[in-house]
Length: 77
Image 1: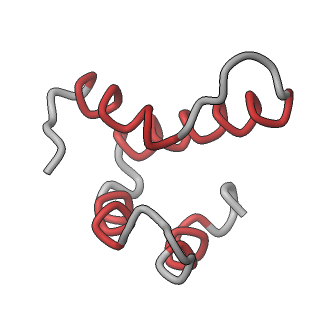
Image 2: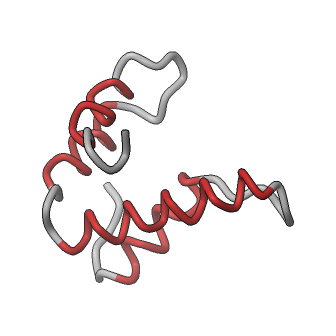
Image 3: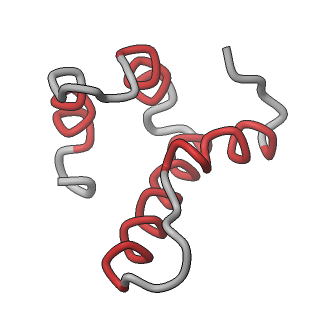
């Protein structure tokens, strides 16, 4: 779903109870097809691979968000 139906996957996050929120979904959709989006998608892939391998400390996507923004010279709102 992350590869073929990215926008649909993000839109479905809006309905997940306890999800990060619509502001993050909007932020990602606004960055779609831009380098920042690809960096975020790569972080998702790495995080999922890490979780699936079940090795080392648990890394959450929310923990990676600020680092991605910092790398791009952006600030979180």
